[in-house]
Image (cartoon, rainbow, N blue to C red; front, side, top):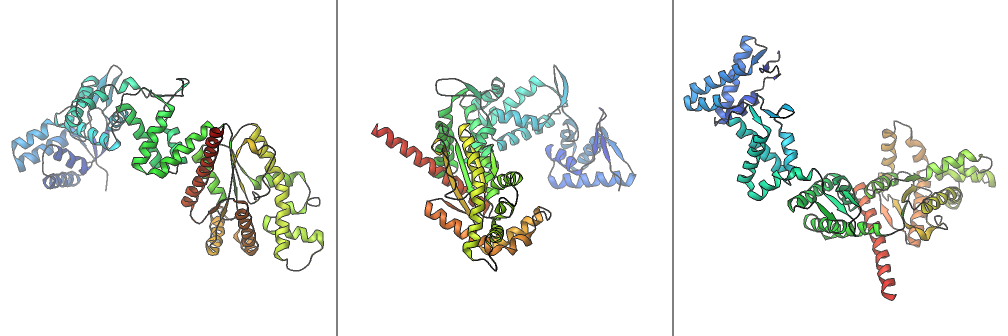
Length: 482
């Protein structure tokens, strides 16, 4: 069936739509059921005639005639007087003319502190009333006054004033540090990231950041202190989410007062989700440096031969095979042999991991390091006191889920990480995980269940928050003694 197009006097055209006809008729006060019947009748007429296009003026004439026949001259006059939904409204200013856009108006209303829902409702009402008034053209200043009048009717004089003064901001809300300088532009993106670090989803974080911006605009604030802004955000979190998330936000923001960088160390065997957790935590915390222990192992492999360090040239779970060759062991290995091969590889890779930690400590840079070689007892370095080191271990205790992770990873990597290799050594992997968990518990390293990513991220953030709580409590005790 060929498409029918509506054309305008300015040369524009778009597909005929019964919806636009119905919208126009309802906007003129026609009952929805009658409007639907008229729209269907007009479409049938056009298709029966074989028309491929119709001028907007002709479509308007047919609509007016149909309404006059069904509802009388008064209703027809309302239809004839208004600007239809398929006709443009042009806004004129010193730069020329442009079509009226509800999207642009919504953005202006948001800049004036209205919520997205309020802005959409106002923009829809503005367009509806412009069309009812038969506005085909309108000066930009007249449109500004028109919008301001509708805002006054709906929300009062203060809201109208806020809208009229929105251009004075030009996005210019500034945040200043204690003492007044330096000042930086308020950023919803930066605030959103801070809120994500407290555990909010990206979508919810951005909505709350936008709500903070609206509050500042409503209060007429052009400049806000950093501490005041953080407290505003914390109070909003208390109202919208709860005290726990608000407290987590306060603690993580206070981290900035510390001069020491944060080093997050995430261990765990293959398939437990440690790299996914590492990426999520790094993103939420704004940490740009992230390293995998597998990358360190690859570099070390490139610098040493298999003959010199055989355990380095195998997977962590079958490093015992290289060790067995050197020691002349035969037959199935016992648990201790498997662990001995694993520990030998970890000891060698840990040299590189410690070098990365030391360099980041000297540069005062935060970093996330993840991998099977991130093992409690192998992570100390000479500059450890100059950083906030936060180790954690990810485990998956459900064996079936752990197996399924390898099958999923094979599909996601198009077979580059074949499942057979891991399942053939699954017993060794599980035994190494038990060993790592025992080490973690003995050394007080938090264990993160990796069964559910969202819960793992929440638990990871909880561990980080608690670590900084301990630091602040220690600082308070030291200050009291001093």
